[in-house]
Length: 335
Image: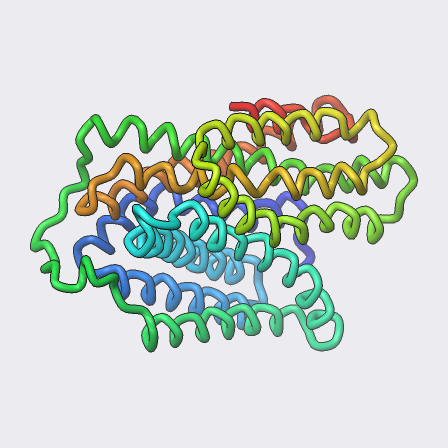
């Protein structure tokens, strides 16, 4: 499409930016019309947006398709997290959240392996149709198999849902959302900027990307296993503090140590234990009838951080001209 890197970056940001506006309404929509309906609506929007991008032969059409997909993804993410919380709250909540979170690096890693090959053999619209097909399969699976937990099966749908949360829930769930957003921005900065550092040391772009992606593959094990171990030990807040500090230390040392593969593996390992514990924090705060709106607030802060943080880090790199991963990622992981 002959577009600039800035326009590519805008498309990437479009996937996160709708969350700032639509995360809270998504939670309210699920509470009003039912989680299953809201979830499949989000997936339907993702299918529609992907098809629109596949048909699009202009930047404007791709822009519109990605915006539709981003809105659907916000709705899907908020409701999916709430659905998992309903099933596992008071039980294996940290472990279950770790399993759900592992789908994020798994999807990215599979996309890196599969989508480029599909685009080379066929064309870039085929990648869009493939992604839409995956969302369509998810759409069918949710319709066919999802059911609410027994504790909620006989709860009537509310006739009116309020956007407001009591302050005793609003403040701590907002802090939890900021923590989750800062944590993810720090990791995104690491995976986004470390290849440039390695290329600057003389490594090829393919080898640099592969080396950094090793940490991504490691998270497929560390996320569910870390959640399980954190839950068994029973110190989730201590786990968050200790392992986020370790992530910050590893990222800080990356430019100074000649073992990038080891450090990439270490980041993948220490990423697992705190992730499930952080995203499970709202379940300790929210009463059952406020979970939809509460997770909407949680994800509003998350999407705001994800939309703004990487852009600020990129600006910092442009201003300094440094190939090192911006140390804002160290600060964010420490927060």
